[in-house]
Image 1 (cartoon, rainbow, N blue to C red):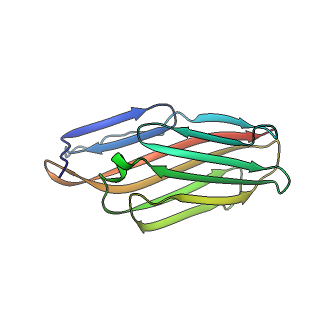
Image 2: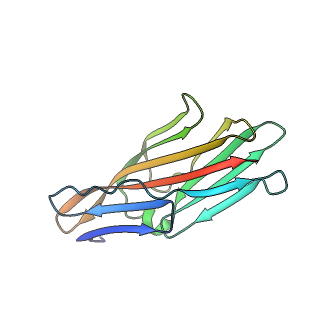
Length: 150
């Protein structure tokens, strides 16, 4: 069993992981978004850090955006039980991708129609518990990706 007394990590722009074993809530805010411009010559992008790996791809013929997000194994192993994840993309009215009671190693993924030339803001949050020296403690991973398909 891994025990964490207090951790608040900001790892590279775009992802924050918070685990806290004290009784006072901590405001973590949203991470600074990572930005990427997709082009027809370079329609795919992978961005990873010590917490998660994000993959994005634009299909210019179909005007679709496909994405996936997966926690790295070391972080996925910290998840006690299951997690709940929600992803929205600002700029796409009504878009929401929600998954409840999924394992820590689940590959979040989706595809959505986009308008070429428009800017979008993908925001994802996964909530779960981690074991700390005070017991199961709520934690989460936030992902922020801003992108445009030029």
